[in-house]
Length: 531
Image (cartoon, rainbow, N blue to C red):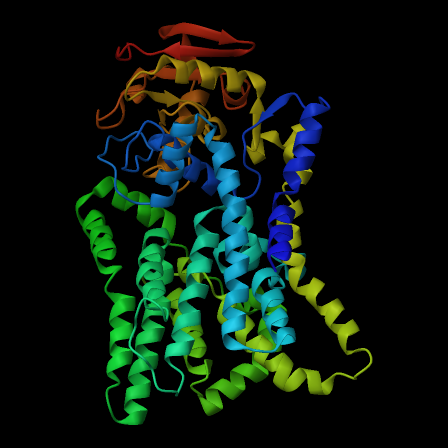
């Protein structure tokens, strides 16, 4: 299983080999920025790592210009940033190494969960294939409708392989869910439950629940509520309180409480961080039909398993997995809160019921001889959306006609400009640049930008429009460089190929040109007002 896990992790990394080949062959006149899949959210993760390279422990949101104190969040990226600072390696290198390691660990925990539930190797393999590589039918329905409506094409947190393409924290969050589920299913079985100890999974629950709250607190809520409801239902059915199960529940719920309380305090008392979090986490859910399509064939296969779970409501894992799945769906469609952000790990219970259905129902209906041939055809079909996510960015990365839309790479002179700004090592520098350039300035130059990210820039849509309006204006407006409320001031303005696509930037004559890189100029603003 380790070999298969490593193979899947390397498959997710394989497009980078093509990029390396193209770069070495000289088939491009632009610099690859380091990320291919989920590069917009990934740039925010890299910016967090960059902010920690010099030894800080608080996340500073470099994609927004407003001054703020930072917050102790996204600890995994802070640790990776500290590691990059200690080793003098690029944050991109550390990020991708961590991404591969996180993916391997996730796949191993998925199989560990299967081994906890089933003794039959074939059944474990069914679950592993569905949980690790399963996706929906967004690839098919997206041909005729808006592909953005289908979560298997847009939300990597719900799908294990897709998550391994885009981040470090999502695979680790899914791995944490698998470890917790493996213990919860054991604890909630009708057998006599021993109290939690160091040797029987108690430490796993204690530590992993805390880690999950640090990695992705929104994934903790559905599984925690499911565990609590499952135990309460057991007590109701038994007409007694099971003291060991109560201890297990406390070991599950108590460790993350300080972390969750800290997050709530930050949301309440830090308007900058609160605004950025709200912007990034609140995602409206798709229609019910689009949601079902997003779960696709695995959900269709799981129908008999779900029917049996609802009808019998057995304590052999069905109760917990059913309540967990229902909680995820309810939280996604709750009219308030983060909604779609609760989808993380949804394929675990879906794959569980699909595996139950395969073994208990579908295998009996398949003819004996072509049975495995049909399964061989089935599994590639559940992987198609993941395969599409894997290869889709390659089509545009070296297509100059689409460069302004992808922001996966920038002209070489921008890489030179980033290095120049980084070497200045000036505190609290804010840079104005085109939106696609602003996406990468915090990563490579470790400076803040006026606009750089659709969710990590406070009031992102207004700032993006303002940046575009400033570059395309017919008259000079120097006051814009001091911020609307005067709480920040731009130090440098970039004007190169990406900015020329927006407009002529009439204020350049009022700024001091301090550096040139091919067709790119860097201008310094000295604080003057508009004439």
